[in-house]
Image (cartoon, rainbow over all chains, first blue to last red; front, side):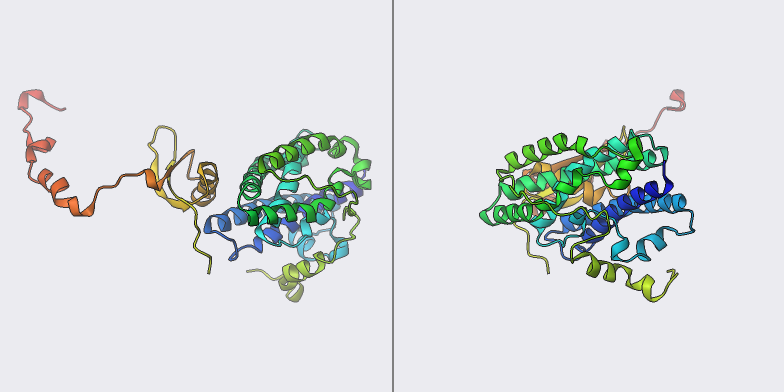
Length: 249
Length: 96
């Protein structure tokens, strides 16, 4: 097993959780309800906790002395390997819930598959993340049903959020070159598709929403090529460590 | 400012451990019972407080009227014979 491929694989997973965790943290102080303010912050903290464990593992694999802060705050946009969906702006609450649903339905199955994979260090992290992801999915699915089957306005916004983000879901089921090189050390992404399709179908039916029919799918982001939204997000997220390298509280 | 939510109010009860009773911890707004349960989990069990959650519509609670305070509660104040300490335990009984 190539250490370079395993490093990039773990780094990509860490970047996924950090970018989405940071996006959700941007709701703090702006959520439509106090209850949702706490719910979104809880989910953000779960994701950032997952990212920390993965960055620590990645730093150990790389063996170049980079810790979690160096990996999170010391790389530029082209160095980030996250899925493009996760860097997309929050938009309104419907769009944020759409992003949570699409990604949540994936990770609900991804973490248990990783927990059962041949990589013991990753399996330990995945076992904990699986419980958190099960709740994240439930939260998103219940909100999707309430918004979709709610008022005309909530339905319009929920459907628009799904339509706008659908093109980023093709990448969920593509194996990156690193994942392909790792064999059973990485999760078989195409194998997750039937479960994801069925889960999304059940939620959309309950929500009386339409399944988007986009045929064009965006690139994955695993090669460091991103939408225009990641760079400004990183500029804000990294400014303190960039301005005062090694700063501690 | 957050807009005033036009959602029903729910009372939240948490059981901290097996064997203890559910205790009232607060209230929240949610569209229905399932959402209230999720919100209760996020608002009231963030620090590992709970093993079980109940949510009850606030409208389902019948509360005593503060104006009934005298009629409801004062008559109990002078019934000393309802307190166990009112009774002297005979010496022959020993430790109870």
